[in-house]
Length: 309
Image: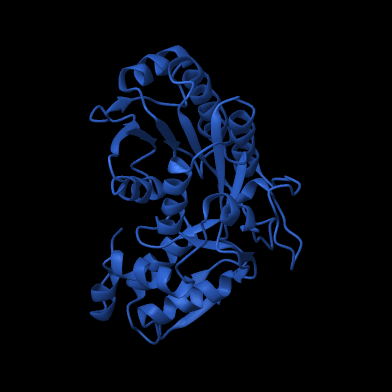
Protein backbone atom coordinates (compact mmCIF):
# COMPACT_ATOMS: atom_id res chain seq x y z
CA UNK A 1 0.00 0.00 0.00
CA UNK A 2 1.67 3.19 -1.22
CA UNK A 3 0.93 6.21 1.00
CA UNK A 4 2.31 9.54 -0.16
CA UNK A 5 2.94 12.20 2.49
CA UNK A 6 3.43 15.79 1.37
CA UNK A 7 5.11 18.13 3.84
CA UNK A 8 6.80 15.18 5.49
CA UNK A 9 9.70 17.25 6.82
CA UNK A 10 7.46 19.56 8.84
CA UNK A 11 6.48 19.24 12.47
CA UNK A 12 3.23 17.34 12.00
CA UNK A 13 4.48 15.67 8.84
CA UNK A 14 7.34 14.01 10.71
CA UNK A 15 4.99 12.52 13.28
CA UNK A 16 2.59 11.41 10.56
CA UNK A 17 5.33 9.61 8.63
CA UNK A 18 6.51 7.81 11.75
CA UNK A 19 3.00 6.61 12.55
CA UNK A 20 2.14 5.55 8.99
CA UNK A 21 5.32 3.53 8.69
CA UNK A 22 4.01 1.34 11.51
CA UNK A 23 0.94 0.33 9.49
CA UNK A 24 1.12 -3.28 8.25
CA UNK A 25 1.95 -3.45 4.55
CA UNK A 26 2.43 0.30 4.19
CA UNK A 27 5.13 1.83 2.05
CA UNK A 28 5.35 5.50 2.92
CA UNK A 29 6.58 7.77 0.15
CA UNK A 30 7.75 11.32 0.80
CA UNK A 31 6.79 14.27 -1.35
CA UNK A 32 8.37 17.71 -1.30
CA UNK A 33 10.87 20.08 -2.83
CA UNK A 34 13.95 18.07 -1.86
CA UNK A 35 15.65 16.23 -4.75
CA UNK A 36 15.81 13.25 -2.38
CA UNK A 37 12.01 13.05 -2.14
CA UNK A 38 10.21 10.10 -3.70
CA UNK A 39 7.95 12.63 -5.42
CA UNK A 40 9.60 15.98 -6.09
CA UNK A 41 6.94 18.67 -6.05
CA UNK A 42 6.09 22.17 -4.86
CA UNK A 43 2.37 22.72 -4.39
CA UNK A 44 2.90 26.48 -4.36
CA UNK A 45 4.19 26.57 -7.94
CA UNK A 46 3.67 23.25 -9.75
CA UNK A 47 1.04 22.95 -12.44
CA UNK A 48 -1.60 20.24 -11.97
CA UNK A 49 -0.44 18.29 -15.02
CA UNK A 50 3.16 18.18 -13.78
CA UNK A 51 2.05 16.91 -10.38
CA UNK A 52 -0.34 14.42 -11.97
CA UNK A 53 2.54 12.87 -13.92
CA UNK A 54 4.54 12.46 -10.72
CA UNK A 55 1.57 10.94 -8.90
CA UNK A 56 0.90 8.48 -11.71
CA UNK A 57 4.43 7.12 -11.38
CA UNK A 58 3.95 6.11 -7.74
CA UNK A 59 0.23 5.16 -7.87
CA UNK A 60 -0.65 6.04 -4.26
CA UNK A 61 -3.58 4.41 -2.49
CA UNK A 62 -3.70 7.40 -0.16
CA UNK A 63 -2.20 10.89 -0.06
CA UNK A 64 -1.72 12.86 3.16
CA UNK A 65 -1.19 16.58 2.74
CA UNK A 66 0.69 18.02 5.72
CA UNK A 67 2.16 20.86 3.66
CA UNK A 68 1.21 24.30 4.88
CA UNK A 69 2.52 27.72 5.82
CA UNK A 70 1.82 29.21 9.24
CA UNK A 71 3.73 32.45 8.70
CA UNK A 72 4.75 34.83 5.95
CA UNK A 73 2.90 37.43 3.95
CA UNK A 74 -0.58 36.93 2.52
CA UNK A 75 0.78 35.86 -0.87
CA UNK A 76 2.93 33.10 0.63
CA UNK A 77 0.03 31.88 2.74
CA UNK A 78 -2.28 31.86 -0.27
CA UNK A 79 0.17 30.02 -2.51
CA UNK A 80 0.77 27.21 -0.02
CA UNK A 81 -2.48 26.96 1.92
CA UNK A 82 -5.05 27.77 -0.78
CA UNK A 83 -3.47 27.13 -4.18
CA UNK A 84 -1.59 24.05 -2.99
CA UNK A 85 -4.60 21.91 -2.04
CA UNK A 86 -6.44 22.99 -5.20
CA UNK A 87 -3.52 21.90 -7.38
CA UNK A 88 -3.22 18.63 -5.48
CA UNK A 89 -6.92 17.84 -5.96
CA UNK A 90 -6.75 18.61 -9.68
CA UNK A 91 -3.72 16.33 -10.05
CA UNK A 92 -5.35 13.52 -8.09
CA UNK A 93 -8.49 13.66 -10.22
CA UNK A 94 -6.31 13.06 -13.25
CA UNK A 95 -3.75 10.58 -11.93
CA UNK A 96 -5.28 8.74 -8.96
CA UNK A 97 -9.00 9.52 -8.69
CA UNK A 98 -9.66 6.61 -6.30
CA UNK A 99 -6.93 7.49 -3.83
CA UNK A 100 -8.00 8.75 -0.43
CA UNK A 101 -6.88 12.26 0.37
CA UNK A 102 -6.32 13.26 4.00
CA UNK A 103 -5.69 16.99 4.26
CA UNK A 104 -4.62 18.81 7.42
CA UNK A 105 -6.69 21.93 7.99
CA UNK A 106 -6.69 24.24 11.00
CA UNK A 107 -9.07 25.26 13.77
CA UNK A 108 -8.10 28.82 12.80
CA UNK A 109 -10.64 28.41 10.01
CA UNK A 110 -13.39 28.87 12.59
CA UNK A 111 -12.10 32.18 13.90
CA UNK A 112 -13.15 33.48 17.34
CA UNK A 113 -15.14 31.04 19.43
CA UNK A 114 -17.87 31.67 21.97
CA UNK A 115 -16.55 30.98 25.50
CA UNK A 116 -17.90 27.73 26.87
CA UNK A 117 -19.13 26.46 23.49
CA UNK A 118 -16.90 23.97 21.67
CA UNK A 119 -17.41 24.40 17.93
CA UNK A 120 -18.56 21.47 15.79
CA UNK A 121 -17.79 20.98 12.11
CA UNK A 122 -21.13 22.56 11.22
CA UNK A 123 -20.16 25.76 13.02
CA UNK A 124 -19.63 29.04 11.20
CA UNK A 125 -16.20 29.68 9.68
CA UNK A 126 -15.11 33.27 10.33
CA UNK A 127 -11.31 33.30 10.15
CA UNK A 128 -9.72 36.34 11.76
CA UNK A 129 -6.77 36.77 9.42
CA UNK A 130 -4.95 35.61 6.28
CA UNK A 131 -3.73 32.36 7.83
CA UNK A 132 -7.19 31.09 8.77
CA UNK A 133 -8.69 32.44 5.54
CA UNK A 134 -6.18 30.67 3.32
CA UNK A 135 -6.51 27.43 5.28
CA UNK A 136 -10.28 27.67 4.83
CA UNK A 137 -9.82 28.16 1.09
CA UNK A 138 -7.75 24.98 1.02
CA UNK A 139 -10.46 23.12 2.91
CA UNK A 140 -13.09 24.28 0.42
CA UNK A 141 -10.92 23.09 -2.47
CA UNK A 142 -10.65 19.64 -0.90
CA UNK A 143 -14.27 19.22 0.15
CA UNK A 144 -15.53 20.38 -3.26
CA UNK A 145 -13.11 18.19 -5.23
CA UNK A 146 -15.34 15.14 -5.62
CA UNK A 147 -12.50 12.95 -4.34
CA UNK A 148 -12.55 10.44 -1.48
CA UNK A 149 -11.25 13.14 0.83
CA UNK A 150 -11.38 14.28 4.43
CA UNK A 151 -10.05 17.42 6.08
CA UNK A 152 -8.73 17.00 9.61
CA UNK A 153 -9.20 20.42 11.19
CA UNK A 154 -6.37 20.44 13.73
CA UNK A 155 -6.27 22.49 16.93
CA UNK A 156 -3.04 23.86 18.40
CA UNK A 157 -0.46 21.06 18.14
CA UNK A 158 2.02 20.54 20.94
CA UNK A 159 4.49 17.83 21.89
CA UNK A 160 7.96 16.60 20.93
CA UNK A 161 9.59 18.57 18.15
CA UNK A 162 7.32 21.61 18.44
CA UNK A 163 9.02 24.36 16.38
CA UNK A 164 10.09 27.68 17.82
CA UNK A 165 7.74 29.43 15.39
CA UNK A 166 4.86 28.38 17.67
CA UNK A 167 4.34 29.39 21.29
CA UNK A 168 5.13 26.03 23.02
CA UNK A 169 8.37 25.55 21.09
CA UNK A 170 9.38 29.19 21.52
CA UNK A 171 8.75 29.04 25.26
CA UNK A 172 10.86 25.87 25.51
CA UNK A 173 13.77 27.66 23.85
CA UNK A 174 13.41 30.66 26.15
CA UNK A 175 13.26 28.42 29.21
CA UNK A 176 16.41 26.64 28.15
CA UNK A 177 18.15 29.98 27.68
CA UNK A 178 17.05 31.07 31.16
CA UNK A 179 18.11 27.85 32.85
CA UNK A 180 17.30 27.69 36.56
CA UNK A 181 18.35 31.23 37.39
CA UNK A 182 15.83 32.46 40.02
CA UNK A 183 16.44 36.01 38.83
CA UNK A 184 15.58 35.28 35.21
CA UNK A 185 12.48 36.74 33.58
CA UNK A 186 10.56 35.07 30.79
CA UNK A 187 9.12 37.93 28.73
CA UNK A 188 6.14 37.02 26.57
CA UNK A 189 3.12 38.66 25.01
CA UNK A 190 -0.42 38.56 26.31
CA UNK A 191 -1.22 35.04 27.57
CA UNK A 192 -4.90 35.54 28.37
CA UNK A 193 -6.27 33.61 25.37
CA UNK A 194 -7.72 30.11 25.59
CA UNK A 195 -6.61 27.45 23.11
CA UNK A 196 -7.40 23.82 22.31
CA UNK A 197 -4.07 21.99 22.48
CA UNK A 198 -3.62 18.53 20.97
CA UNK A 199 -0.54 16.31 20.98
CA UNK A 200 1.12 15.99 17.57
CA UNK A 201 1.29 12.23 18.08
CA UNK A 202 -2.48 12.12 18.59
CA UNK A 203 -2.86 14.06 15.33
CA UNK A 204 -0.71 11.44 13.61
CA UNK A 205 -2.94 8.70 15.02
CA UNK A 206 -5.99 10.46 13.59
CA UNK A 207 -4.29 10.58 10.19
CA UNK A 208 -3.55 6.85 10.31
CA UNK A 209 -7.16 6.10 11.18
CA UNK A 210 -8.40 8.37 8.38
CA UNK A 211 -6.11 6.70 5.85
CA UNK A 212 -7.30 3.21 6.71
CA UNK A 213 -10.98 3.79 7.58
CA UNK A 214 -13.36 1.92 5.24
CA UNK A 215 -15.90 3.75 3.15
CA UNK A 216 -16.38 7.49 2.73
CA UNK A 217 -15.72 9.79 5.66
CA UNK A 218 -17.34 13.09 6.65
CA UNK A 219 -15.79 15.96 4.69
CA UNK A 220 -14.37 17.67 7.81
CA UNK A 221 -13.41 16.28 11.21
CA UNK A 222 -12.15 18.27 14.19
CA UNK A 223 -8.95 16.97 15.76
CA UNK A 224 -8.27 18.70 19.06
CA UNK A 225 -7.78 18.14 22.74
CA UNK A 226 -11.41 18.97 23.45
CA UNK A 227 -10.64 21.54 26.17
CA UNK A 228 -10.08 25.28 26.16
CA UNK A 229 -6.84 25.77 28.11
CA UNK A 230 -5.56 29.19 29.17
CA UNK A 231 -2.32 29.87 27.32
CA UNK A 232 -1.00 31.21 30.59
CA UNK A 233 -1.55 27.76 32.12
CA UNK A 234 0.39 26.05 29.32
CA UNK A 235 3.35 28.38 29.86
CA UNK A 236 3.26 27.86 33.63
CA UNK A 237 3.11 24.08 33.26
CA UNK A 238 6.02 24.06 30.82
CA UNK A 239 8.01 26.29 33.16
CA UNK A 240 7.36 23.83 35.99
CA UNK A 241 8.52 20.92 33.82
CA UNK A 242 11.69 22.85 33.03
CA UNK A 243 12.33 23.67 36.68
CA UNK A 244 12.17 27.39 35.93
CA UNK A 245 12.34 29.51 39.11
CA UNK A 246 12.20 32.98 37.60
CA UNK A 247 9.36 35.32 36.70
CA UNK A 248 6.93 35.12 33.77
CA UNK A 249 6.25 38.63 32.50
CA UNK A 250 3.41 39.37 30.10
CA UNK A 251 3.97 42.36 27.86
CA UNK A 252 1.64 43.97 25.34
CA UNK A 253 3.88 43.23 22.36
CA UNK A 254 5.17 39.91 21.14
CA UNK A 255 2.01 37.87 20.75
CA UNK A 256 1.03 35.93 17.66
CA UNK A 257 -0.32 38.28 15.02
CA UNK A 258 -2.37 35.53 13.40
CA UNK A 259 -4.22 34.67 16.60
CA UNK A 260 -4.39 37.99 18.46
CA UNK A 261 -8.06 38.49 17.56
CA UNK A 262 -9.11 35.03 18.80
CA UNK A 263 -9.46 35.01 22.58
CA UNK A 264 -11.20 31.62 22.96
CA UNK A 265 -11.03 28.48 20.87
CA UNK A 266 -12.17 24.92 21.48
CA UNK A 267 -13.23 22.13 19.11
CA UNK A 268 -15.93 19.53 19.54
CA UNK A 269 -14.31 16.22 18.56
CA UNK A 270 -17.44 14.05 18.75
CA UNK A 271 -17.56 13.47 14.99
CA UNK A 272 -13.97 12.21 14.90
CA UNK A 273 -14.79 9.77 17.68
CA UNK A 274 -17.83 8.51 15.82
CA UNK A 275 -16.24 8.30 12.35
CA UNK A 276 -12.73 7.15 13.25
CA UNK A 277 -12.92 5.84 16.80
CA UNK A 278 -10.39 8.58 17.62
CA UNK A 279 -9.98 10.54 20.80
CA UNK A 280 -6.94 12.32 22.22
CA UNK A 281 -4.95 9.98 24.44
CA UNK A 282 -2.23 12.25 25.85
CA UNK A 283 -2.67 14.86 28.54
CA UNK A 284 -1.27 18.36 28.15
CA UNK A 285 1.21 17.59 30.93
CA UNK A 286 2.48 14.54 29.04
CA UNK A 287 2.80 16.58 25.84
CA UNK A 288 4.82 19.27 27.57
CA UNK A 289 7.10 16.76 29.27
CA UNK A 290 7.75 15.13 25.88
CA UNK A 291 8.39 18.53 24.30
CA UNK A 292 10.94 19.44 26.96
CA UNK A 293 12.66 16.07 26.86
CA UNK A 294 12.85 15.92 23.06
CA UNK A 295 14.25 19.43 22.80
CA UNK A 296 17.31 18.33 24.75
CA UNK A 297 16.71 21.34 26.96
CA UNK A 298 16.32 19.39 30.17
CA UNK A 299 20.01 18.66 30.63
CA UNK A 300 21.14 22.06 29.32
CA UNK A 301 18.63 23.86 31.52
CA UNK A 302 19.81 21.92 34.56
CA UNK A 303 23.34 23.05 33.84
CA UNK A 304 22.27 26.63 33.26
CA UNK A 305 23.28 26.43 29.60
CA UNK A 306 21.69 27.79 26.46
CA UNK A 307 19.67 25.56 24.18
CA UNK A 308 19.76 25.93 20.42
CA UNK A 309 16.88 24.70 18.32
